[in-house]
Every structure is written in structure tokens, then in C-alpha cells.
Image 1 (spheres, rainbow, N blue to C red):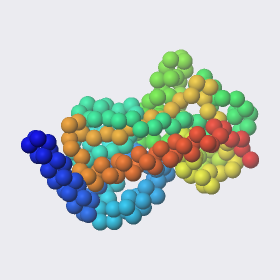
Image 2: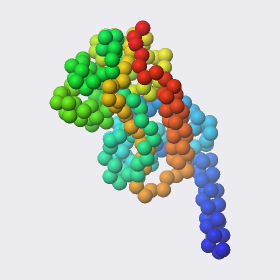
Image 3: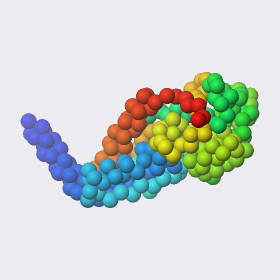
Image 4: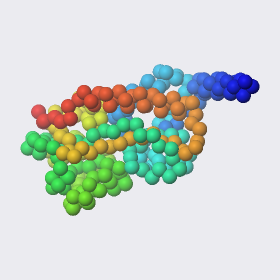
Length: 247
């Protein structure tokens, strides 16, 4: 009985401490580069509305850099695209987002894309600074190796929205995810359409924190809210067509 009482006292003390921290403190969180598109800025606005006294430090990096920053304690937690080097990290998968092929050429979008056809396409790829370290590029490089082909972009850019805009000009074709297209909404030019791959390819995302570390209440609250938003995105994607023809 005494142990049960002490446990309840400890739980109550922790709850009070958590409440106090959520009346102040800082939520320090790392994200992948396209997080500005989704979960998007509305996530920060929602967190600020729910916890108006908590400061937010949101750092957008490539997933490799985010993982390294969480590992060395620079960031308390983060969300990354897999795969990553997970040494010293606790990892919890959160969602998968299907990758699609974007083009203005209706003939290319008449049927699902294949790796063999992708290797012959005039590609515009984002994440130029990271190259093969980028999780999406690395995934397609591995798929190309298995198919005995090579995937080389004709144009490298940093931002996925830039890649889509260039594709809309007919300069080349791009790769992105359905979540990005959903997040961009009306900003996606009507001149482009998209189609999935015959064998579906996904970007997979996960929450990470340093292994064995106890997260602050502010970080836990930010993860909870991010998870809620991503589940909303997943539901929206389920109701969205997987392909679109250019208009």
C-alpha cells in the first residue's frame, strides 16, 4: 500500500511539473526539409494556440542532419524520412507517403511509371546539396541497381516546389509525394499531372529521439500534435485520387 501511495505521489508530482513546463519552456524539434509544406505552418500555429507560453524552436534539415543533431543532443527530438542511421536513437514510424511521377506529358502519364522508364526520363530532382544522401534519391538508386539501370537527373535543385514549377514549364519531369501535392494545393500548376509507380514507392517517416532520453513535456506535446496532424493528412490522402492528368 505504501509503494502504491508513493507511486501516486510521484505521478502527481510529474503531472504538476509537466503542467508547469507547458506554461513555459521550449519545444525543440527537428524536421525534414519539406515540413513547411506538410505538416505545414498550421502545425506551429495550432501548437502556439494550445500552449501559448511555450517557445518553439523548429529546425528544418535533411533527415541525415536531423538524425545527427538528435543523436548529439543538439535537438531533443525530430521527424525524419527513412532510412537513416538509427544508432543511439529511439525510432517510431508514423506514416508512409506515396511517391509519384510529375509531368506535363499526358503520354507519360497514361500508365503507371516503372523504374526502367524513369531511367530514360529528363528528371528534375530536389535536395541537390545532399544528392545520394537524400532518402528518396537513395531509394531510387537502389531500385535502379536492382533493375540494372542508372537514374541521373538532368537538373538538380534544392526545393521540391522549384522542381514542380520547372516541370510545369515542360523542361523536365519531377518526383514528389502525394502529401506534398496535397499540401501545395492550388499552388500546384494545372499544367502538370502525376501518376504512381507500377510497384508503389513510398517515403516513410518516423519520430526520433535520443535512445533512453526522457523527453520534456513540451517536446512530447509537439510530437503528439504532429502525430495528430499527420494522421489527418493520411486520411485526406486516402480520399484523394492517386493520379491526375494535366489540364
